[in-house]
Image (cartoon, rainbow, N blue to C red; front, side):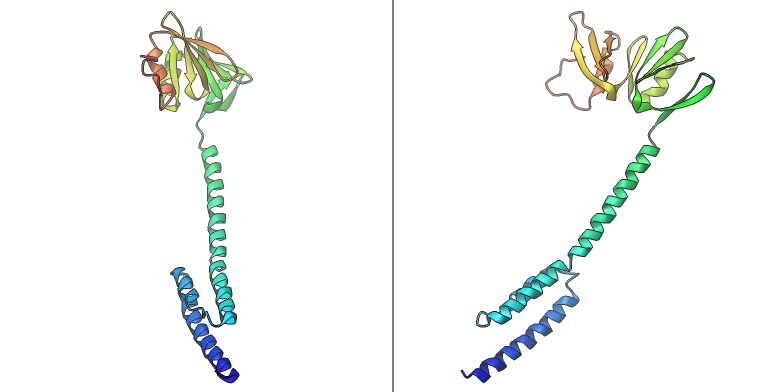
Length: 206
């Protein structure tokens, strides 16, 4: 084959490749597999054409990256907004203390303890006295993850770090910060609510 015939064949092959590339590029967003179809048109006799085809495949693949980056950015923005909303909607408790109305996040209250006609909200680093009965407070806090463990104590289940069985059939419970409370046999069945899943503890709190 003469040099002129080789050049003509190359020109025809390039023209066919450009036409197929234009057709595939129009639908590449709908089906990325079309880029692979174009790759199959590479000529084994023409390394220059093979290089051109490789360059097209890279261009077709990278054209999808900006879409992925935009989607990831939008996802991160939505997640940040959800975090802000979650913080705003975190349950809080309002009560009178020293002539003012204080608001505390329930998650920051470790326990509630009866003290005569008052209850003490165990909140680090401070405790607050509220004029209300423990039974009333326990009923109000129950939907928010608080359980009664003693006739005079209600604890936040998310604050509990350790349970220790005692020979008497009672339990000693430790919350964040190291403070311990006694769980009487009357209320020990409530300890089941401390975790959604118990492993190897079928007889615990039974």
